[in-house]
Image (cartoon, one colour):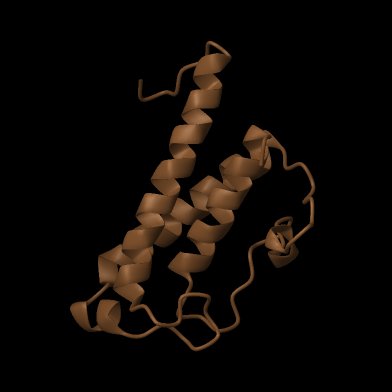
Length: 121
């Protein structure tokens, strides 16, 4: 994952999947694909507009999910088909924050090496 777009698409893919973990029929919105994260697959290079659109989609999911999330929902076990099936939904959401922070820091580091700053800096 040496390309900055690849780090961003990876972080967004797993953020989207984790926010949708209780949906058994989840798939990322096109042009993104579940195949992007398969072993030994180099996904297509996504454009800036596609990645920014995916950020907006994930933000909407966060707003919707957390505006209605109850303690009982957070305590629910993940479906057996999920990669972290032994966790509760709440544990997954907390773990997802850490994952997203790590990759956000990688993207920010790349931008700084290019003498660019994020809008919030």
